[in-house]
Length: 283
Ligand SMILES: Nc1ncnc2c1ncn2[C@@H]1O[C@H](COP(=O)(O)OS(=O)(=O)O)[C@@H](OP(=O)(O)O)[C@H]1O
Image (cartoon, rainbow, N blue to C red; front, side, top):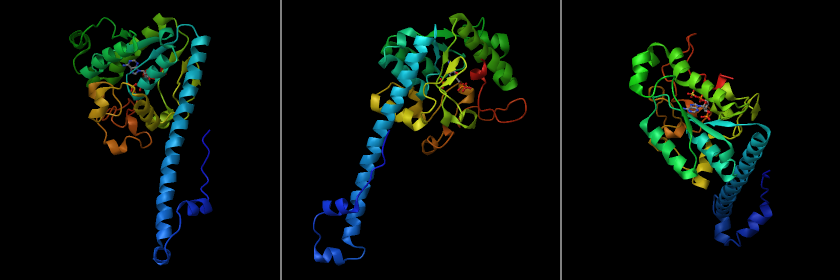
């Protein structure tokens, strides 16, 4: 969908005009230096065009798949953690007129950054929707959660924490929605666990599976998509306060680094490093 440019030596040479004798005698020749400049300009322009057509193609693919999702499945649900990729999906749902046909679910783990809930209100107003919020069974506030499970359960027993704060509310959300299709924003470039992800999975779909993290940010920039304010504070991904760290900006777009700040110092029961809470494997 985006051809490689062919830069002909002759046309490049002729676009430079005549060189003086002195210029063509100098070492390295002025001709070579000017051709290098011209080539750099061509490459820059080509990259811009390539990115534009790539984003158009990716956007169209996501729209087509979401249209199919809404046509084929009753009560589709989009669960959003309000991170960059999710912002892209919200924007595309809105742009394609599909937003009213999809139930937007947000899980308030009661351990989130306060900015996350403020941002939820902001996007709700911006796009004109209301997310359905789910929390741990029987808990409305952090105090109620701490009383029921202990205030350091996420340190003492991360498996139980994930189950009660994330997995159970998500299962409840899907069950109550009577849905056969769960839309989410997972992508191949988020790490090896997701490297073979497809757009369509059994009862799940990942409309931006083939987008890179950089594509998401270029798209956000190009379409002025609202995004979580803490991304500007150094967090490429956001979840609970206790499992989210900043990552140096230079590393954000390296393979798998988007999630490098998540679940630091947390381990699975088998001793391996924790990189996911398991919320996406509930189905
Ligand atoms: N708080 C909250 N509310 C609603 N939905 C949520 C939430 N956290 C995670 N999710 C959904 O689960 C998808 C996978 O999440 P993750 O494995 O990245 O979660 S976690 O990082 O392990 O916490 C995740 O994928 P994305 O859409 O890419 O965010 C969401 O669809």
